[in-house]
Image (cartoon, rainbow, N blue to C red; front, top):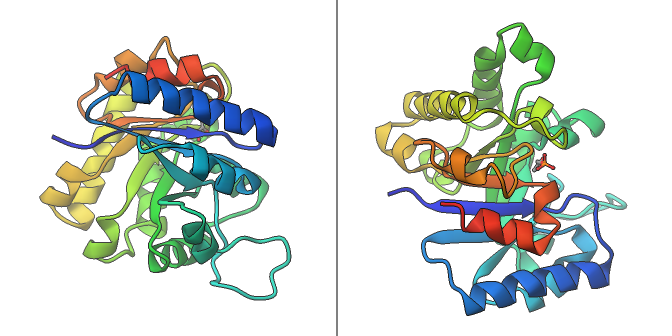
Amino acid sequence: MRRQIVAGNWKMNKTYPEALALVAEIATDLQNNPVSGVEVIVAPPFPFLTGVNESRGANIQLAAQNCHQKESGAYTGEVSAPMLKSVGCEYVILGHSERRQYFHEDNVLLEQKLKAALDAGLKPIFCCGESLEQREQEIHFSYIAQQLKEGLFHLSNEEFDQVIIAYEPIWAIGTGRTASSEQAQEMHEFIREQVSRAYDAEAALKTPILYGGSCNAQNAKELFACKDVDGGLIGGAALKSADFLTIIRSF
Ligand SMILES: O=C(CO)COP(=O)(O)O
């Protein structure tokens, strides 16, 4: 059986005390009512990583939302992968559509970021997803295939072993309009097939593929029931402990 994972991407939300309260609520609940077989990850903003790391307990793992492609140097305002590793991060989200859109991250840059993350011992959560326009033009499958090929499939087998893929259709992110379970399943199956072609059947079988985009406490169960959906990358609904905990318990 594949790993089941729920990851909360807090994006640019919360103050420090709010972030600490949120992780403490989740950690306490998971300690009192352990959920077996589900990996829980939170991705707070950079300044909160150390504090959240200290409060997260044993049942939650830490992710960063981004990293720079260089190990260190004169890059004012940036944060490197070794820095993230040194404050307790296990994962880093790369290729999120908001980074691609607002910060012009392309597949060439993402290739460098993936290498930097893996070299530092961080496991990438690699995001892909099409726009509404691309879906309406019915080019969503070819677009995702291209994102995976250019952005991800340059990794060696050993490197790819570390990767979690997140399918996040842009039209579903923060819009309240989630993909239907049929839409999610068919794309996840397609992604798995691309992995099989680029690597092998075993890699395809074991790579976790998460769904992201208006996944919430109401629809998580139906989405997670899909054969090829191994959990979720959650935005808005990860900011409230009760909702996030319900999602964690939706397998
Ligand atoms: O972008 C997302 C997670 O990375 C999804 O965001 P929402 O759950 O707010 O739609």
